[in-house]
Length: 169
Image (cartoon, rainbow, N blue to C red; front, side, top):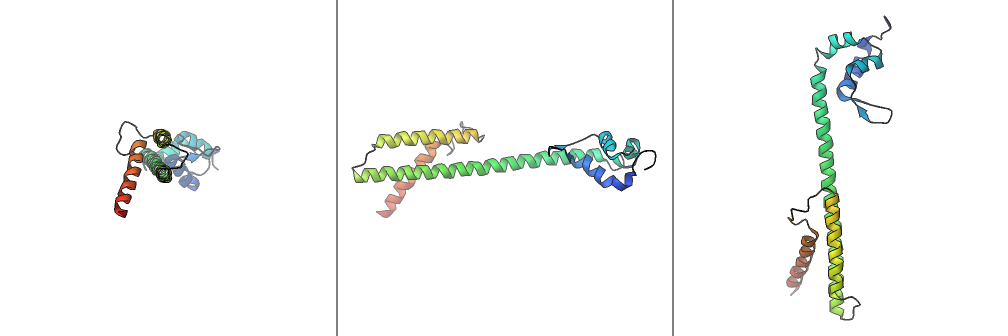
């Protein structure tokens, strides 16, 4: 430790990584510190670090590239999560519609059911509204109705039942 500074070459890899990739703070959040602040933390000479390592190795460009990649990775992870959530919502509500449809047809067949067909219509309407609300909460637009609305899912469920019925005949 000459002149109050640590020897840079002993900690250069840690310095480089902290500057380019960021470092986790005490709360576990990644932060990107200035080169001057990193030099203070590692107790190394800022001018020497900048002149001998940072500028010749172009750490700033590497950092910009890394941050772009970091942001892109975060966006990709979020998009993937939203897609998985959307597919899960579709599957859950398709099951709800199937169960409701089957119950309605069973009630109609037995002719002694307690529920009227209008009751099933109201249930379906409520499910469709909930479905669309979940899709909207997941960040999907309700303006584009390309088989993503609750009514489309209900219609698809009923269409499948009719197709299955025709196949049995």
